[in-house]
Image 1 (tube, rainbow, N blue to C red):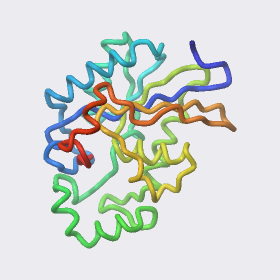
Image 2 (cartoon, one colour):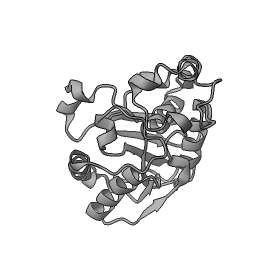
Image 3 (cartoon, rainbow, N blue to C red):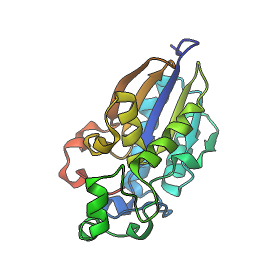
Image 4 (cartoon, one colour):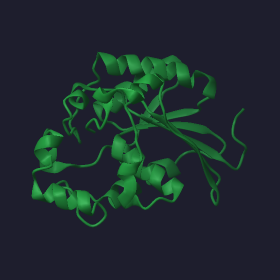
Amino acid sequence: MPPDGGTKTLLILRHGETSWNRERRIMGAADVPLNEAGRSQCARAAELLAPSAIDAIVTSPLRRAQETAEILGAALGLVVREDPDLEEVRFGSWQGMTYEEVMRDPQYVKYAADPCGSPTPGGETILDVQARGLSAMEKAAVGQRTLFVSHGDIIRSTVCHYLAIPPAQYRRVRIDNCGLSAIDDSGGRTEVKFVNVLPDPGRAWDPLHWGVAR
């Protein structure tokens, strides 16, 4: 059943897995492609989404998100459009580093302690990131279901907004590769339907996937 005329339904999906996710390496704006596991995740996500009567797909233009969206679009019979507001955090000099490496950087320690007041080397705070994500989602048409394909921290911070969680607490929200979240937005009233539903739920308990890089 489609949403009523005064509501827009936002479906938000993180891109599929890449080799850098496996290596716990920060991707940021790097155009890292999906790996075989990631493509398989996307195929299963398409099956999960098939009954949802999606009207539009909007994606980050970064390769891993774009490939995810194209797999879904082909399966669902939808044309994909891009929105740069959905791109991952601009991590600057941290891009390409592993988490073990970056956690030794004093600037990262400062950012981790105060993500709203301390920017990344790429010049973004989590408030900037959240604002970009919300800007993209505000463009969704009322009365339609729009699927957004994006990245971990964009999704975490956006979900925080809709749950009325302080954005500095965004790391409390777990978002896995191909994790799906859903929000009904009727302007003055929002309802978070679910967060991080997986097409292969057993993966949530696989230690290899805990805390994977963005």
